[in-house]
Length: 178
Length: 178
DNA sequence: TCGCCTCCATACAGTTGTGTATGGTTATAT
DNA sequence: ATATAACCATACACAACTGTATGGAGGCGA
Image (cartoon, rainbow over all chains, first blue to last red; front, side, top):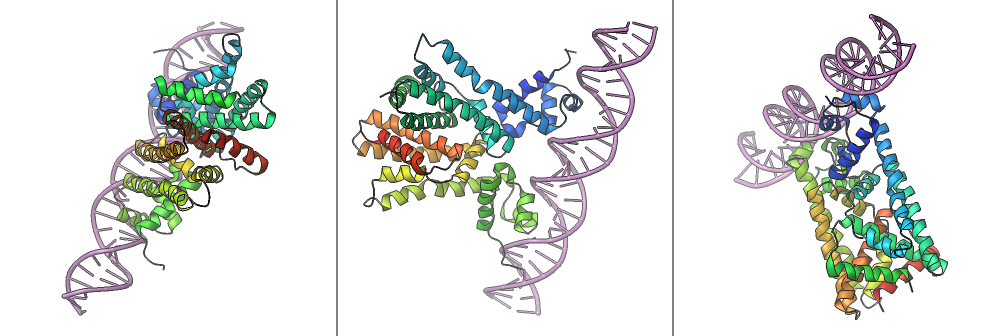
């Protein structure tokens, strides 16, 4: 057969399953079937289901915040970070993000992961708004509103296009500047 | 013993369970135990679990949109509806709302219910913003952003108080007027 | 009072998931 | 060549949930 499976193989399948079917599908038996092996493999790599789910959350936690922020800092010369942030945040499908947050409403471990990500991202937006010259208390309030709006957009899962997207970005940028 | 149970008793328990433990707790056996009866009662009132969950969603659907809108129209003379809407929307805990939306990420029936509620509420906010004198395309964009922000606030589940709340409402109202 | 309808209990069969124990296979180092 | 460790299959015991079949208790009209 193929090569032996690694922990990463199980985590990748977990993220894909989470994205496509939600956290309720993170079960050893269906995952093993999808992987084409028996649960013996699963229970060799992970102590139990809770350990696996915690590993999935850690995996998500590592990439969720830093990937976007790193991208912004990298393109600082091409485009204002906040402008680029809004354009990218409100331009993608966010199925994995939505699945994790759905998970977080009923699982304390997932909730902790989400809260950590939220603090990281919100703090970054706050710093950008302060750099743009807004008084601190106004910057904090608007950063919160912008981040809430991002969460709401993510939740509704309707992609933006054309004139509607342009109009929305214009109004969002209005929150970010004067 | 007590009186015989009605369908409404099961629906009320369902909404409470949904609020406190999430949609994964909507199962016949635990609910019957919580009710103090056997599953025989459950399966007499409902054909199966799917029928019960559909009934729960219809129950939620009936009250979720209309209760707030009716309240606003009733107090039209006391306070501008939009001002009152923002104050009330961003002032409550919204556990049930969050549970239903978590449910909606993995269940098409729940998703349909949420989408119907979203259209109803968003349309109402759009009409309020147009009444306040904004051009139609700007009203649509800002209504969308305000509603997204409400969803994000609901999702994060942190109650607002004091100066922070005042600051946020001020910035939200800014989106609604000039 | 007889029969019916409502509401619920009990018992059974079946499904799906968990976790553990045990042993087999393959590669690799010695 | 063989011992060791990594990786996986198989089998077992157990738990939780679903749905159905059947019967019993209680009210209520004819």
